[in-house]
Length: 356
Image 1: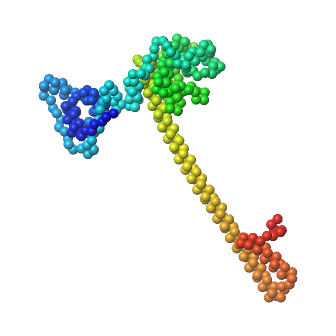
Image 2: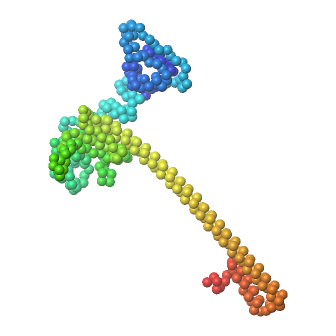
Image 3: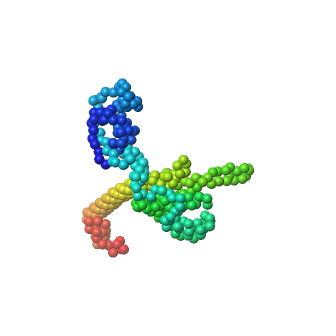
């Protein structure tokens, strides 16, 4: 869409020279959207009777323009394309719904009679014939719609689902199975759906009786699970008139789910990387502690070997002094020095007895 940039003074002149109804025809904004922009940029607007008074040449009061403004003096308006009713200030759901409704080739009508049934419509009818109303029937394995309505509303439900499926396929989507669930598949996102008939609860009339549930004829179409659920049900507007809105919501739902999945994937990657780094740091620390403990043990072992040698030397000098350094004493001195050499980690001498 093309845009135009206006200053505050230019917008002031515009809203005091052109009515809101004409401005919304020129620019892709709603009445409220233009009012919000004027309020945001501190631009006064004519009151509701201004244009009528002007039309009949009655006296009008024009509020003065205030040139003092702290914000950026640049306002961007989107020019409305011919035949395009979408306003840029509308919600994404409204914009997407109008995009679908404005597509002249989109199949948006639920017919009174299905002329070219979708394969899923055919298979759902086959299932109904085979199951004969048995809700626990599980021999039919082909893909089918998930419809829970009374016999009186089966054909209407089938027409709705057939039209919805055709619109989904037109938009590039499909219906598929994920595990055992039948889902709408949009850009790799599986979305649960369900079409059912609303029931009215009739309380029991006896003390030990049970409540009855009477079908109301109102259809309810639901998508999603848990907090992501969204329902459309018959009211003043029947669900047949909501095809574009339902598909628009499904597409936005899929886009949001895809963003959530991607955010979750990135978070998981970051989490795994953080865990890897923590594990790596922990292992390095454990390895460092193990190496240090080994160093400490070897140094203590070395000191003990030195103590043994010192003690042996004292014993030797004592024997010399007392003139008792005989063959037996010398043998003991040699043996003790050998044990010191065996215990000394810097020598690591072998010992036939202790090594075994």
